[in-house]
Length: 133
Image (tube, rainbow, N blue to C red; front, side, top):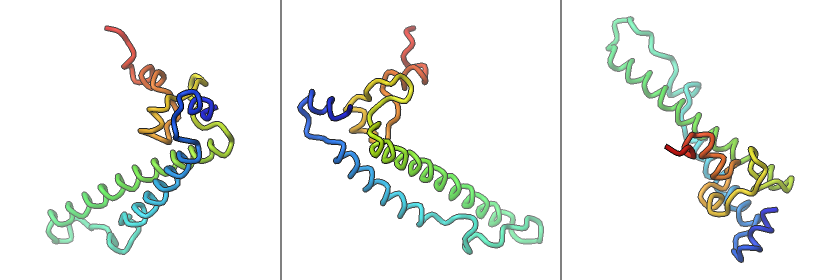
């Protein structure tokens, strides 16, 4: 279906090009994810004991680092899941179709966010941006 949009608009992007971009983004995310120091790594073991007479500010900094690492790791993992999902939709021939309304996702939206699952209209509807004041 996306190929029909591309042909109609005369654009040179193809599903193959989107797939290549998604695979490139996935490889970069995987590397970034491997570089995030997770709380289960030796860097964060043992966890602060709070109250053994050690400097509490150092322990608080350690806890903050752990929280930051977990947040970054979570964001990267979510992006990776979205990319894997987009690659699966390409395999199934469902790429570029809005999961909410079933219409085609705009080409300009896919260029900005190749892993998009919703068209612009549905995104606005879900976020309340499409309402008139």
